[in-house]
Amino acid sequence: MTSYRHIDSPLGTILLRAQGAHLTGLFFAGQKYHPADIADSRDVPPADAAVLDRAASELAEYFAGRRDTFTVPVRFAGSPFQQRVWEALLAIPCGETASYGQLARTLGLPPAHARAVGGAVGRNPLSVIVPCHRVLGSAGALTGYAGGIDRKRALLQREGVGTTPG
Image 1 (cartoon, rainbow, N blue to C red):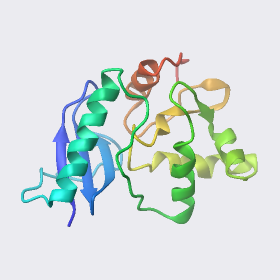
Image 2 (image 1 turned 90 degrees about the vertical axis):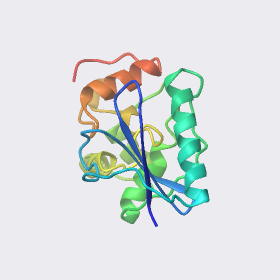
Image 3 (image 1 turned 30 degrees about the horizontal axis):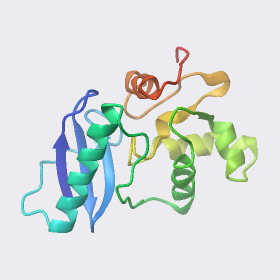
Image 4 (image 1 turned 30 degrees about the vertical axis):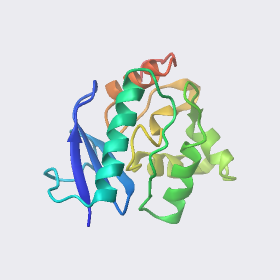
């Protein structure tokens, strides 16, 4: 069973998705790849309810400036390559950024794979918690973010990262 809950945030409504006591999705309203017309779940299993509560609490702390890392358990659903990229995103500390090329090198890939890495970053189903917003284009330029460039800029500013126009 998959459970859903909408929460409010300073950057708009967020849809949380849980399954088997793991958070499997975090999507901003209007975000690219957002699940279509999902209503909050009824009869949520206790383990899913606990993970949804924890995610909502940790996100509230993050947006209030009281949390920089997340401990809510997550589970990725994607290709092995996507999962490798998403795991690598977790290693980018709050307040720091990496380029797509740097991320490719971290994964042991040649710089020519930066576009493939970018494609996987863009499909990250756990925005904010798996910090795809910390990946920038060459020379620090803001580039695509499934939740929108304004949200990416706001997340980076919340983390104390200066940004250049994208």
